[in-house]
Image 1: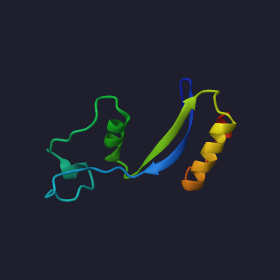
Image 2: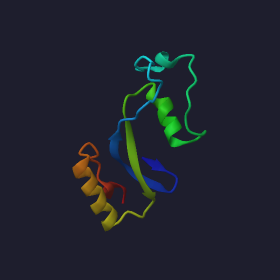
Image 3: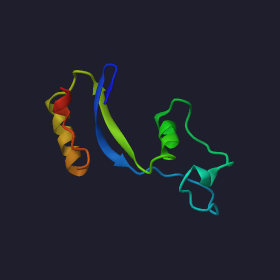
Image 4: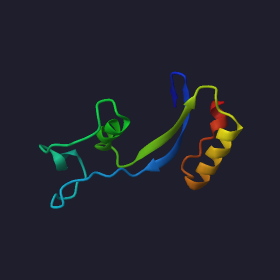
Length: 97
C-alpha cells in the first residue's frame, strides 16, 4: 500500500465485533440492522470506515505504516517477528525499502 510519504505492509487480520442489545437477533449483514440506530466513531475515523466496509466483508486487514524511506533493520526485524505470529502477513517490508 502506498500513501503520500508513507509505506506499509499488512500486519494481521482482525475480527471486528459489532455490539448490540442482548435480545437482538444475530447480525450477518446490513439488512439485519436496517432501520436501527448505529453508533460509530467520528467522521473520517479508520474504524468507522472499517465498519462501513464490514457490510461487504467479514474480516479486515490491519496495516503497519511508517514514513516513506524510513524502513531499517529494526523495523524489518520486528515485522519478521510479527509475521511469525501472523503468517498471513507474508509481504516483506524490504520490498518497500
